[in-house]
Length: 305
Length: 271
Image (tube, rainbow over the protein chains, first blue to last red):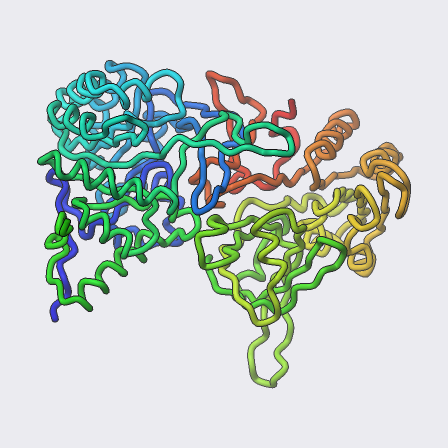
């Protein structure tokens, strides 16, 4: 049979396959260039960006847990000026869409960032982080209250003509309500899930292991929760959904597509296998070949309940 | 680079401490002292993340068969502290591990005229052997090795065989001098004589003491740090330490994995 079609489209961004790298697990792409062919993956999503450089949390910031890891990095990043000067030139050399994840402390900051990113030709689209659970002021409010989410997405929408993806937090009572609010504000797509708030304790010292006390859980441990939420949201909204949560293999990725995802993001897997995103795309292709499926899009939402 | 390695040997050199030799591609012969490797202990999700280990030694052995190419090997010295190292300690000759190496910024060998003072605490000697190998023959090298008790003193013979003057101390006096390695080292640093450079690796309290001595005596000093990390390539930002100019408004975090693990002591914030 002919090679299957793995291409998908998210809000006008054409992806050669559905595999993107999740923000915060892949630096700015350049860090991984020696280990993975960046032109074999769907898109690169860069580390969450703010207007000013951000220091992040004290250490320890990470802790492995059974089948997963906790992180409380605290959104350390270089800020938009250094991003434009030092990171964009590399992204220009790679023939793969770059999507920039960003966050602000206020609606105005979100809008200002969107306006500035809108002017950068190398930026194919934006992913708004309204969901990082580590920052005491800012993200968390926008990510858990539908009205606040609506206002921030609306402000970004008005500041850019580029595709806008909203990354949703699983740390809410009803994720569908959040998804509706973002879709009402004319988001182009939704990505989920961000990390689940968790913690780890050291019995010997009777102290939390992370300096921030709590952190975000990611990795294979969260996959069942992520699948459930992707399925719920994909049923409820008309815009494309991007599935994230513990994807380690092509099988995992295809399960998310059955649940309704148009594309997926690979996160924690990049840490242990820097070529994970490329490998997962290849595994998806092999599955399509051996099951004689001509187009990966046939699987989107094909779950039989 | 990323490669599958075969374990050649995995020997318990002292209770709870292992020395592992694995096969490596020829490019690894160019690894710098102080660089490290990330080991995927198992192709499974528990333990999930790779584990970082300093490079204890890299070398090349001639082929056993005429006409065949020589073989490069890499050695790690590790202490069993958790799930990852426990699993690693059960491996035998012929087993496989997945490796990313060499990673990070290593030691600066500096001016050969200077005397080189190496200070290692416990498992902190791991990156110092490969460093000593690179330094002997160029410079005078003295090695100060400390541990809690005699079982924590590793590979003394190996260092001596290189021709390094080795000074051992233990907290409980069961081997060598009784006392802290930094106290023994300080006496030698304060000796008159040629200019000296310190290279140190060990637990944080030891490194702090070494940095204090370096500052007081105006001696250049490089420290190799240990940190939890998920990726080893500067992406996860889990392993950061505060740089000299760090402030809340002016973040100066350095990645142990990429900017380090070796730092000039005066580049870091020690409080």
